[in-house]
Each structure stands twice: as C-alpha cells, then as structure tokens.
Amino acid sequence: MKRKLMLLLACLLASIGLVIAQTPKKVTGVVISEEDDQPVVGASVLVKGTTMGTVTDIDGKFTIDKVPSSSRYL
Image (cartoon, rainbow, N blue to C red):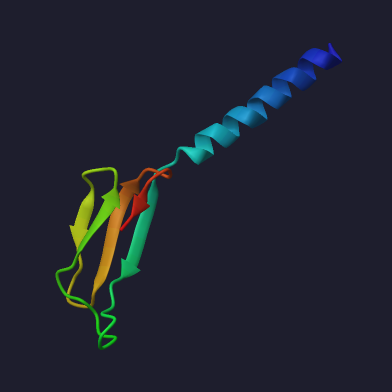
C-alpha cells in the first residue's frame, strides 16, 4: 500500500512539472537604438518559429501575450 501511494505521489509531482513547463508566457521589453540610445518607434518584434509578433509603441515598448515557453523572440 505504501509503495502504491509513493508511486501515485511521484506521478502527481511529475505531471505538475509538465503542466507548469507548458504554461504560455508574456514577453515584454523595450527596443533601444544602438546608435543614439533612443527608443525605436515601430520596430517589429517576432517570436522565432511562429507567426506571433508585434510592433513597438512610441516609447519603444512591446508586449506579446501567450508565447509558448519553448519559443524565443528576436
């Protein structure tokens, strides 16, 4: 009985880790020009390997919601 309980607990903990790893993330940031350290207005920010992306606002800020945790942005 104790062995079955420990096996059930181990499976439960492993499944929780898998669920958390697949949770979509929110990516935010600011695009700054290397030349004059000013925010870049209208820069495209894309998530590598997907069709997800956005454009920076007047302050160079961007936000992309529901980004898979396995993705990278450029």
